Image 1 (cartoon, rainbow, N blue to C red):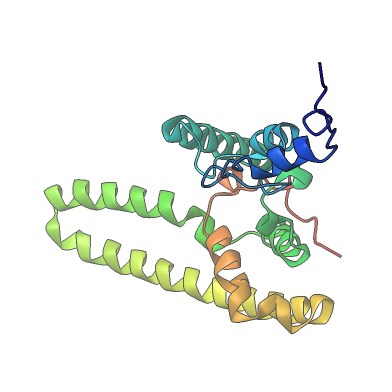
Image 2: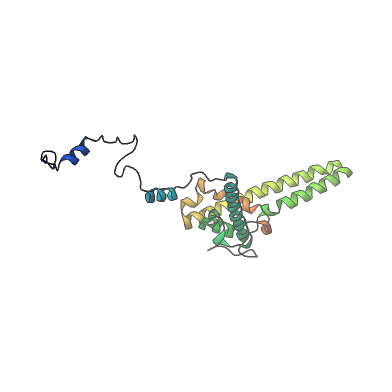
Length: 209
């Protein structure tokens, strides 16, 4: 039996040729090659770093913020009652305001007893008017005179205190934005035991240096 050597001829490139002729599968649309998308580990890290800009529960967040503000205000109010300067509001810890408080607390002001005197004179005026209406006029005159005396006392107090503040702390301590004038006269017309912050000395006469 004759062997056909032509059919048994080995062609080393036949398989490669067949493979080359096979159709290449098209890449799925939208699928990128290489590192076009984050690896699973990187994606997990990115998800962990994400933080919502708006809290999930706004009411709870607002309630917690109000509670913190209320706690801070209560602590500051308690510090003003006890005279603890370190925990008072920042405006009350200014050096010239401490000086103003000490100066006003060291002197007697006519205005600090104005409200009780005015209330007492009003009651007396009502009683006297029921008996003799003509006597109410002198009582009102006395009340107005006392009121003007309070104003004069405050003006004189501020003129002297202003010079001391400028000499010690400079013009900034009496500038309009500092509100030192209103701070001084509003404290001077309050009864000493009701003033806040509480006076540092229980009795008058302790003038600031």
